[in-house]
Image 1 (cartoon, one colour):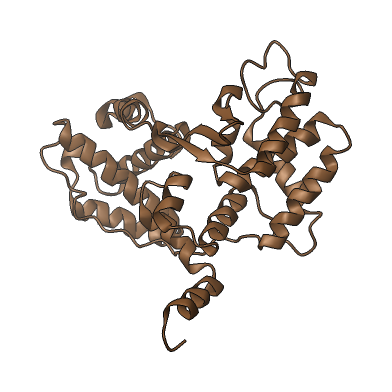
Image 2 (cartoon, rainbow, N blue to C red):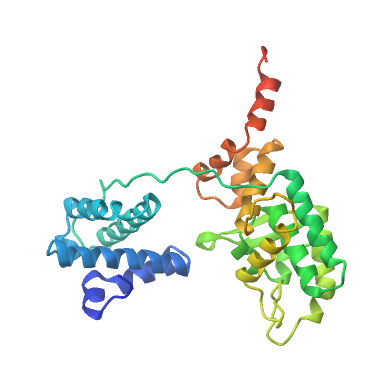
Amino acid sequence: MTSVDGVLDSAWWLSDFRTHLASERGLSAHTCRAYGSDVAALASYLGGARDVRTPAETGLADLRAWLATLSRTGSRATVARRAAAVRTYFGWAARTGRVSTDPALRLVAPRRHATLPAVLRADEATALIDAAGAAADDGDPLAARDCACLELLYATGIRVSELVGCDVDDVDLDRQVVRVLGKGGKERVVPFGAPAARAVTGWLAVRPALSTSDSGHALFLGRRGRRADARQIRAAVHRLLSQVPNAPDLGPHGLRHSAATHLLDGGADLRVVQELLGHASLTTTQLYTHVSPERLRRSYEQAHPRA
């Protein structure tokens, strides 16, 4: 169900729910739309298949029947997300007195497959940065921007949405840190190294060539002088990675995965990496500990007396 008519919206308080997600929980517009759409899909299913018209009439058996229907056609990840959406919805409805009991308290969805993220090897990451640096040497301001973006993405592991949201004042080149606004409106400060600092300095030197009255304080700009968007940076990552022989075709999030993996391979503490990446849960960060058997082997050989 892609849209909600006025009757359904008012009966299930979907507008209020979306407002709660955005203003009180600070979720992204994408997540608010997805969760709202998921609850609307549930309401449509219940009204047509089980003659349930309001949240107050919904029981655990109704929710389980809905998930069973979804599991026949949707992926495990989709079913898990929709289950999370309705758990969030009914938890909110119960807390605000819209329903007397929460039917989703014991709702269990299939676990997502813990697929390991694709990452670059350290030498491939170096080759990627070298390719970006070589392009920047030609004097093209956009190439200098792309080089600075790739250096920051790999050096910090920040999300591409966090990168393009940065303003000039968010980067402290003396301290070599960048301030970013992450998921849920949470701010964190992430360090970066000298190579990234040099690349950002180089970009700032040519930024005026693209700057217009629409630029504002945006750190990274597009060709027309407006704030660069994630699609432009993603295209640059794909284009430059194509110049690295046999490297996987990753986007900016692949650089985030690579940064996390290489930090852990280098001996960084798991909780430090969690803080750097802005993960709310350590469970998310722990995924990277399974990526590199070499790290486990080194730790074993260093620690075990019979290694």
